Length: 115
Image 1 (cartoon, rainbow, N blue to C red):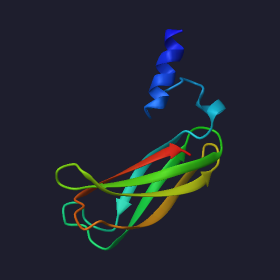
Image 2 (tube, rainbow, N blue to C red):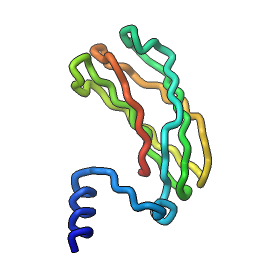
Image 3 (cartoon, helix red, strand yellow):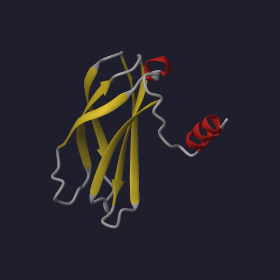
């Protein structure tokens, strides 16, 4: 009973639950293996930016959402872009995402989740 309550609570708050060995039953299990942007991280971002992402799927085939989050120098989220792709089981794929960079962005992060 405690386990079910815990899992329900984590899912409701958007947490990540690892069900050791069960991800193939649930759908895609994506991970980001590499990220390359066409602008320097140490410099100020501006305009449009192409970000190349290597996504690996260790789960079943399905839809994966790639989220790029921009933050200012204080860690405040100033922008977010998402793209959805369909990826096969055990596939690795390079995806190029063109994004409009917020003027006050200093850093960005890239995440992949089952959609």
